[in-house]
Length: 377
Ligand code: AMP
Image (cartoon, rainbow, N blue to C red):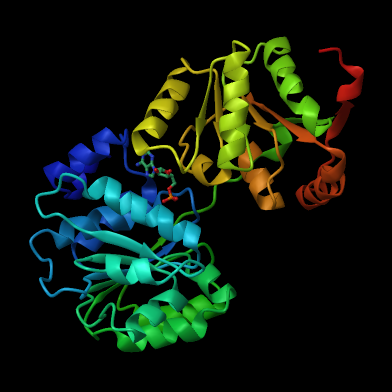
């Protein structure tokens, strides 16, 4: 199936090609035509399924020529549980909205930061991506009006309810016009999510995408006990010793990612960092080189790594452990595929010992530990 058969406009097809999206993911095949037809959708899908583009693309297309001219009256509201997701969704709208005949202004608003810049930035916004609490504050201060919303998206609805946003969501729903399109995405269909579905969805198209199973058993996992200072030399040693040609290294912060990539380059190993502070162009360039096999090491933070759409990677190195066991499995899961087993290597400092035990327990698998002290590098 091709994107061109889903009813999208030539400018959106061009934007898709620019992003190297060659084929629609299953959720996109189903959701895009339905949303273009203004049908309600219930998408049971996880992050990674391509759910964001499945609603962003048809929403952008439906907005063409139909944008409200009333200032501070938005057309589309996307409710999300977290700041991170708000920023990611905003970016997808901006990426695909570039170069459309009718320009669409998107803004993400979330709590935990000063409200004033958001109040000002709401001028002329068409698509608002918001966490529920901050949205209500902005509505109460008359910075934005919800009476012209004609499409509502609830993204990661299960997480939103788990985080205790039910009351805020109910309050927001009461402020919206009755006639509107509703799109609801959730990884699971809990009772709470089901209650909301029943209230807001009208004859929805139901799309269920099974989560891809990570085959942990196929992955060779190794962990090195190493001090913080020795991590750099150990990384270089492993890359050279094992003659690794395509390695994804995970770092905990933007600063760390830059630092690791710098040190590798200084030691003659081709590496680039990819994180939220790099421009979209720089990220795309790094990723393209990495995919093409002309960049040996890509150093990334977790948030950005979600966007790394490479089906199979031979080696992943956790220079630093992720906070949650789920993220650990997500990171290493990129290397385990039916026909080709990959390897996952983790660096464990004395402070990480306890956390790494928790990760292994959650994963239900114990990892071979090697003492870096015993290695000469
Ligand atoms: P999501 O589930 O929306 O978080 O998307 C997961 C990742 O897949 C994102 O990094 C997208 O950029 C990427 N992606 C989504 N749809 C496609 C596609 N059709 N082709 C290639 N990459 C895609």
